[in-house]
Image (cartoon, rainbow, N blue to C red; front, side):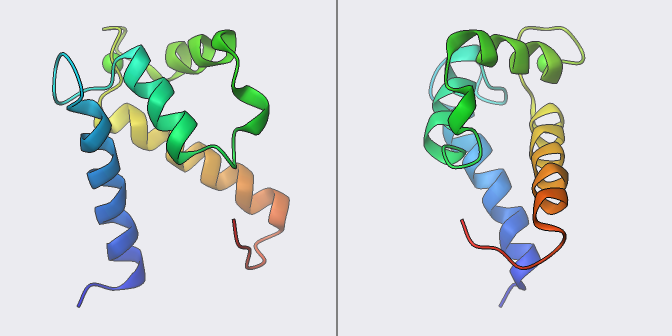
Length: 97
Ligand SMILES: [Ca+2]
């Protein structure tokens, strides 16, 4: 049975591919796919960033290779960044969403 952390890693991969396969290239997130993922999967963390310009900014920040798509590596940097921000806010204490 996978550990808690291994399960979390599997979830990252599963969620990424669920949205990445919706349209166009299946291995990357388009702007629309990224928006859907963030609205559905990060709605608690990103309540203040639901407007279109915020999505555009996040997309630009994430798309480090500039191909207009967010690949898994670029997506992971979003998750890592949010996790670090979240850990800082909570001071490392246990939290629930
Ligand atoms: Ca990219």
